[in-house]
Image (cartoon, rainbow, N blue to C red; front, side):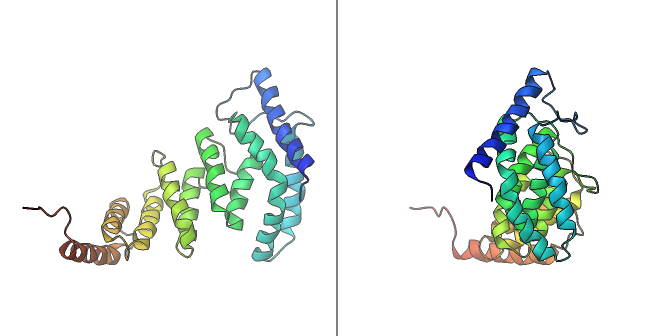
Length: 233
């Protein structure tokens, strides 16, 4: 666990990197390749630490144990990551991207979504081996998790809003809407109908037709038993 002094130093290193980049006239926009970090820079140090930790993680066969190891390691990186987000330069930063991925692995969906917002807004690249761009990865992974973890549903809803203007394969968005629709079928059938209809519009094969029929039936029954805005004489 990092000490308060180490936390402050990591954040300061990230801000100092941003100041050097600004002084050197580095562009603030997306830079998928990214310039090589200056020797001794905050990014340089964190990348070296990330390499050591990832080498260590590769030696852990259990996915549960690997996730726990990541949970213990993440606090060493987050002060630096917070500094990067505060500086908001938009430069390619593999440390930020990896912490976004680790946040998914440890179930910290709030942190995952917060970092994804930065990654998507600045067009940062995913690591080698990841075929999906950040927006599609975020929505699809949260939809997968939310199928079994109701606590992830609000984050999935936020992810859809965050990526509403982003291009991705229709089945990804359809699956997310199906999960969100099925989640409220018993509590808000009208909202379930809206979400499930949108899911089928994106992908007719998403598997939401039975749920949509049930939602429509429940919504109709609710409207009959509790009519809204009844006129008064």
